[in-house]
Each structure stands twice: as C-alpha cells, then as structure tokens.
Image (cartoon, rainbow, N blue to C red; front, side):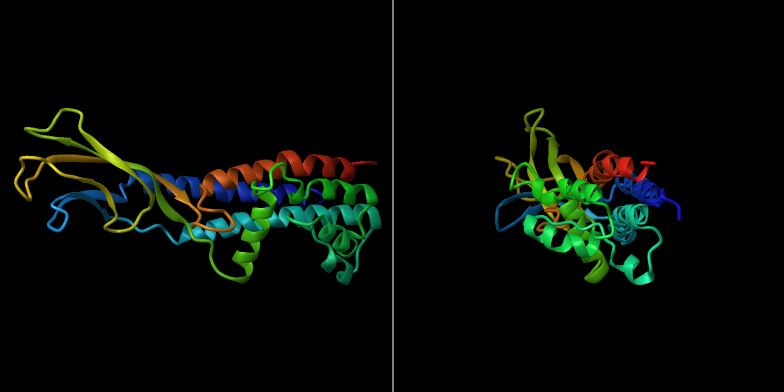
Length: 262
C-alpha cells in the first residue's frame, strides 16, 4: 500500500480541473453568443436578444464528476491509510467499511457512526476528523465545502450528471447613432443564459419603429452549477479550486502528521 494514494488522487483531481479551465476558456473565447437587435411591436421598443452559437459541452459535466469523485476518494484513501497505520492489514470486509465520514448538521451523527466507519483508526485520528466536520462551520448560513462535496458526490454517483450552466454575471449594450447621446449604455441583466434571452430593452424617442442603430453587446459569462442545493448556482471553477485547496491545506496536514508518526 502506498500511503500517498490520497495525494495522488487530489493531484489527479487538480489535473482534471486544469483541463476543465482550459476548455471553458476556449468556449468563452469562441463567442458562444451574439446579440441581435429586435423591435418588439407589443412593447413599442427595442430588445437585444442572444443568439446561441455554441452549446455548453456535456464533457464539462463529466469532468466535474471526475473531479468530485477524485476529491472524495482522496479523503477515503486517507482514512484507509490511517486505519492501516493503527490496525495493520485489513480484511476485505473491514476495508469496505472504512470511510471518511462527512456530516453537516448534527454532531450526534458523527459520534454514532464514527465507530463503524472509523473504528479501526486511532482515537487521535478520529478526534482530528471530528474537528474537520462541516457542522463546525462558523456561520449556519454558510455551506461548508466538504458538505457540498458530499452532496455533489452522491448526486454524481447515484442520480445524474452535475450540469454545467452558462450564466451572465452582467450584460449590457452600447448604442451609437445620429440622435443618440454619446456613451449611451443599457444593461443590468444577470442570470441564466438561453437562446433568445433578452439582455436589454430600450425605447428611442423620435425614432421610427424598426429603426436600426449601431449596437454592441458586452456579456460577462460565468460557468456555474444549477440554481438550488447543493451549490446554489455558484462558480464551478471557483468552488472546485477552493475545495481542492481546502482538502490540501486544511484536511491533509493534521492527518498526515498522524500518518507519518514513527
């Protein structure tokens, strides 16, 4: 057994994340949307609508699943190494029961289950793992990264792909033309992006219906999880970066210190 398996798993998750980042950048550089100016007869005004040029690649959802799987496996590999450290070689049945448990809400859940999942670890190792539990979050409204990891892992393994969604952080259009005040800018839209999403509306006094003006659009696109639990529409890259850093910088050091004791 290599006691560094957990490190290799985390490094592999990071490689998948680097690949995902590069793929997202290619997507963003390829102008996935163009804005088209339309006149709305019912509203008597103009709209800037998006015309989707590129679909969000399904491969991203598979990459996210691979990253989540390897991050979760890194924790379990570390728990297994700690069990071997304390108890020696394990039978297949004992090895199957070892798991780095994660509980978000009730400390009682940890203490009632820790002897089953972590019973072959030393008391010191179990104490350190308890300190790392998500229910120790400083603010009840804050979702601990390990709690989100546990939920995403269960979703990816047992339910469905973790979708990647393109979302507008901000969107606006600039208007130019005779009779339009220089520097005119219309915007304010933020939210999910779809084909034909309206990112701006405006009316031009004195202009005939369907009059064309020079319009240029600026859209700041973020690749996010879907809205709602467990990641609440947050940035995929931002969360995964923070998660892997948390495991490397917060979870690993105290447990590796136990693993490396003579």
